[in-house]
Length: 414
Image (cartoon, rainbow, N blue to C red; front, side, top):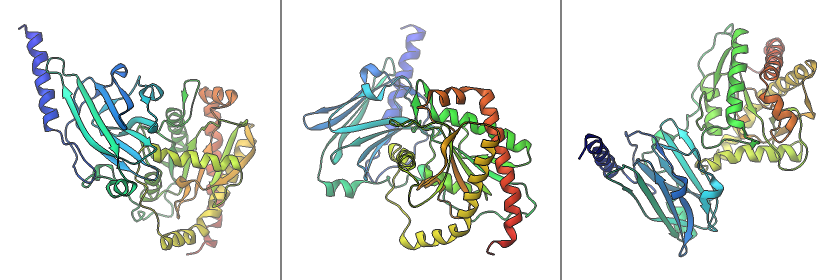
């Protein structure tokens, strides 16, 4: 055996040992793994299909990796976590060949971890899962089979596995004490990321475009004397709850979420600025809010934990002061955008129940910079010079709001 063949064989044995050492997490069991390594997926050998009344998932991987499997409900989803798989080149529409499953999403989830989420039309349970590794090449074939169970059984087993602290969202902590003369502290929120890429049109993807713009806006605001943080500074997933908690934990003075969505029907053009409202100001805003919130479902977030009625009342009380400040921030941004002659929507001020705007003590707005479904907006957002004008207008609007907000500060409730 040549040296190169011995090396390949040794690699195969190492990969086999890793697979033997990995823990397959069944619902309610498991713990985090320390292994790492990036496996690529061979689309030709991978499929999600129905077989004899069951759902089968087959993934052809370049190497064996640790993984876990669990289920979530409302809606019913199968979640497969891997450490770590590169999904580039895998088309969800080609991968999914099933009547039992209605959709599949996959992508980065946390640093070092990736995720596949399969939404299913009926309750299923994991019957078996295995990963076979070729000793010569190190390539692996992962297979999982899910069989029908009752709705009661599915509900009883659904939920995050025990001991899975690695994927818990950051919780809202008491905001740090701030010096009254401290610089304005801003949390910028580039929408989507990781397993949730956001809108896509003509090869333009919302998540990376918003991250680019957030970095550009951060630089402008920092040069103006503000302290600026990002909810994400790479292509990772952050849940809506996590984004809100980060703003609170940082003691942010305001929260600005950045998006560029796409609508399947109608003709949406120009920038819009949104605030929180129990009732949507219009049908388009309601649909946008639903699309943004659905990102958490697609990414496999357990939404069974929700604010109880008492907590909701307390948050509403806190918003009685915060909400007018958010409204004034939105108005200031629209005024600045209009004064710079930037393209605004015919109804630039809108409102809906956006979960990412629900921080009770941080003025928050969501800015749809444009719509990727509009050729004009898409081309504008790809133009660095246009983005610079847009960022300058948002900066000026934020600074104008800060002056007005400081003037009104003595009138606020103590």
